[in-house]
Length: 313
Image (cartoon, rainbow, N blue to C red):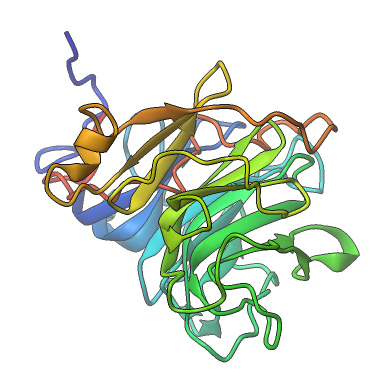
């Protein structure tokens, strides 16, 4: 039997959240919990308000030392990047969503914050003049690059990357495009959105609302970005909004069902397992925290309606 523990978030609890929590990640160094979404949070002494991004202590109280600049739109995805400064320093917090500013500073769809106090750093990779909304992110092995999915024509001005692309997040190339897909997804309005990204033994699986030559709403690419035409699952009849990796390497898929067709297609459930790829891509061992873990794999969340508090354990 499942019961709630003492992590007391709610009307009579340590903090009050009004709205939706869409992404959660736990910092390795101290167990603190970063939450993101479309919400207003109040809590702490003195009473403090946070919007769309906040950090909680392991007991559910507000960590007032984490004071990010206010974002002017929702946060749909977040991930923790191992800090290049060394293993003893807090992971950097990368957020993606539908915002255009962090405080008074322009940040279109992507921003990176200190894992200590939440201050904004200089990572500002998006230069497209078009709208950019980020729905999903994944950190690649090695911790120096990320994949970004969402609703956009491009991330860098003049470099087509409709709804899916990769960026360097470390070193001299930080902020530059360093991964792109070839084939599979169209560079037109038929490719509506990418909602979820999952690494699968060297391959990249994406879910969303799109059409490919062999399936709809779910596709797989090699580590180099080549569309995998051998991956031909039965097309789910609804948008795919969540992906997760089983221990045996198979993918769990979840999403929105229009009527009963999605559930019928997937044998009575909105979750199913898809096979592992036949070849591996990345061969290097991932840095600690570089692969999405159960605590941080929230980039492709299913956007549930919020409970009264938006969060429970």
